[in-house]
Image: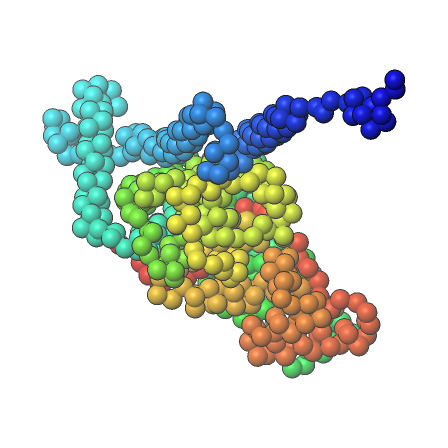
Length: 528
């Protein structure tokens, strides 16, 4: 008998699956996915941190949290080793710098031993005059030359050390000022000794001596090959000089930034009294001229290692680092010679360094980190080198930096080139006014006009003003820094060129000249 339909359906209905087993398996899979996702995230973070560490990028504490313990220890050890290596490299550069300085002083001592006369005590063992064949006399004289100069040099050094110790140099600014004065005296002494030797040799040979091929050279203060400016200017149909007779100088007047086609002003301000050093000779005889200044400078460097400029106010800190940079660059040229290219100059600026307050500061670090100077657009190769090779800035050295960039440093920092501004002393109390004066004096000395009435400006000045003055207003901006008669003359020339030559630029740019040359501006202070 067939079963009822309702019972048949109940009898053949499928059995339900066990729900707890299915949800348990799904939950397990979700946990596995979460665990794998977390592991992937940690591996990705670890890879990024390690990749950044290999690329010398900064590793933060948050990044370190993703690293396993052994990786954290490894990175910590690497950081410690890198710090130790950096300090050793700085010490090596400092020792190398001192070695070169001591070598120069040794040459000086050797020269003194050979050329200074013996003391009276050494000659007292003889009676009467010594003949050329008197070997005993020669022996006594030799002994006197061997002992006396060393003792005298030591006595002078101790005396000078006491003077400096009494002076104390508790003021870092006073020390930096005296370092610039001392290095200026060294440069002028070496240049004068070279000029005297050249003059004597010229008189003997009755002919001029050709320029040497070495790192240092002496050149005339100005080029006499430049044609007479006044006569050619009068012949120009564009300018009338009837009321400008007192503005332009004759060819015998010193023009510190003389260039082709540039006429010289009769009034160039403080640069008219500048001392120029355009080449030197660093030999035994020349070092004799700068003996006292060299000894003083070495003691200054020893004092420099003991001071700490971190507590200086903004103006005092600015003046300190300006003076120190200029002294260091001169010292670098004296020790290593003049580089032949911007690449070698940049290497020199990284190599030459002073120890200050327990830290080593190179010339490049002082200029581009502490003083916050921008890459020089007037020297594109140097700007490219700075872009390719970043300067490392340790955290503990950031506290030595000035508070804010100072654009006027363009007219204060000298890298020892023909187009560089002159070197002068900057003081803590008046550094802002002195920077304003440096800008004005540089513009008055470097800006000129051509025979055709075209304003001529150096490239370094044009690049400086390009950020806030357009080319149309540039001549007007320059006129603000010139004496009244010169400003009126420049305005007259510019307006004439605009009327006669529509659509052309009213000024020309003098290229940056990288030949070695230092200009030392007058100093009211003194080095005691």
